[in-house]
Image 1 (tube, rainbow, N blue to C red):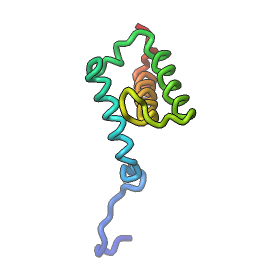
Image 2: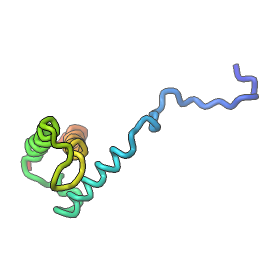
Image 3: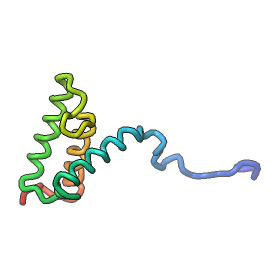
Image 4: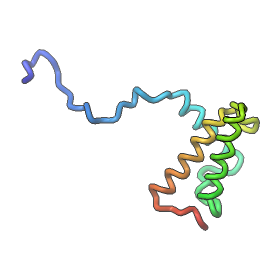
Length: 102
C-alpha cells in the first residue's frame, strides 16, 4: 500500500519512448523530406504496384549497406534510414489493408 509519502503512477505497461534513438528518426524524417521535395508529400501512397516497388527499394538500400556503402549518394543519408522509410511504407500498407496495387 502507498503510505502517501511517495506518488504513484501506473505506467509500467505503457510505451517507453526514452528507449528510442532520436537521431535515427531525424535521419528518417530527412529522407522523407527529400522524397517530398523530389516528388510531393505522400506521393508514395499513389505509386502503382507500390508494395513490390517499395520492397525492391528497401532491398536495394539493404544490399548497398551490406556491400559497405553506408551513405546513399542521392540523399546523403544512411541507407538504413532509407530502408526504414520503405519498411514504414510497407508497415502502413499492412495496417491499412492496402495491397499497393493501383
